[in-house]
Image (tube, rainbow, N blue to C red):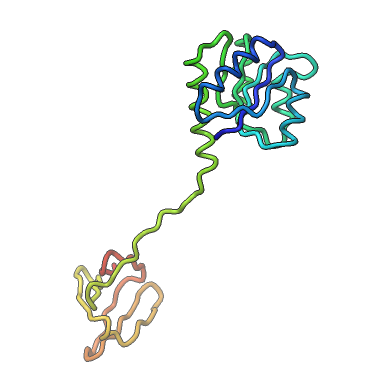
Length: 190
């Protein structure tokens, strides 16, 4: 559940927001405030995941309030003034609902809140690559325009020589010489 706080200085708008929140199953209402100052007290005392906030309010407007928060929750602005839309996105608002808005508009904004909330709260898991299993005891070495198959057990030692590698093989009088850039591809070393 996404803990939601609604903030609007107009009682009818606050009542409508509360009704809309109750119709969205993944939102839970933690408070209703008629001012940003009242909202600050709630945000400081309990966890709030998202706020739906009006912009034009007395004392402290919604935009200034959001900018004053150190770690703001997800924000959806609900206002009758379209001229604040650009500023809303400058504070990383999830959405901007222009009054009057419908329940469908509210649900779309709530879904955006849910997506952002889930993205922020999903533990990051690094993809794990399967460890290659050696299916046989051979490797392939690329040398002078050809690929040579060598048993791993037959490698005596590998000697680094500037830009080349010398792979000394048991029972072979001459080492295999290859470029030092090694790129494993399956069981092939290039």
